[in-house]
Length: 89
Image (cartoon, rainbow, N blue to C red; front, top):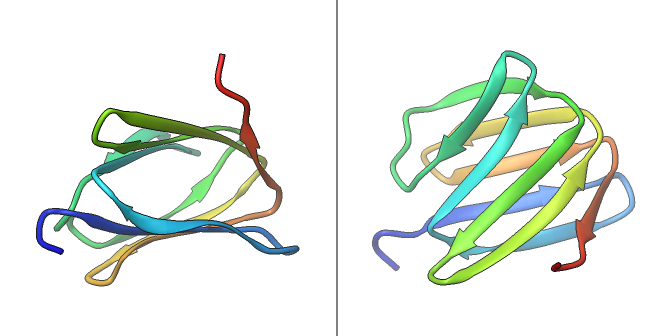
């Protein structure tokens, strides 16, 4: 599907989220960052904070505690030390 980002959020226990989305915002140790489809490759460590997933009008939030984010031609993978979805408010 053109124009979508393949995103996977994984914790040691399980795959927390996997799917095609429009954008992901995450808490990097050097500052928050956003990833869109066809983003330039990079890897960074994560600090504790929210990962926000945008897909059309839907928004999902996950709380992560450390880990790494890897952006490459296949998409974005976050390997989190801990990750859980935050209930919508």
